[in-house]
Image 1 (cartoon, rainbow, N blue to C red):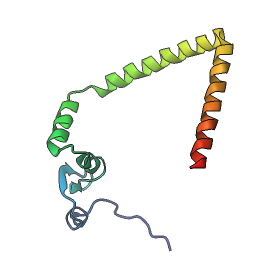
Image 2: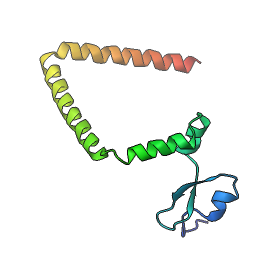
Image 3: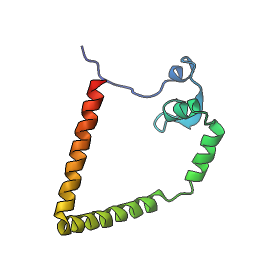
Length: 115
């Protein structure tokens, strides 16, 4: 029988009883400490320390992400316009490229299926 989700959040026991250390981050809804999991745990396994993560966090606070996103969007718009005009001017080259990609993908899939 299905149960309603009700109070979904991090409980204090999920951060302490499981042996997972808690980070300095807190839940924005309830204010409880969030367990160190996911990306931070993965980076820790790769040898990236908490100090390195904290340095990255502090440097990212000064970055205007929206400006970078706007720049990326503009590059994508310009790139798609260039690709569209190239395809109109060189339909044979584009068709040959698509055919090569299709054959390559087919060979790759068949090689993966053999193993």
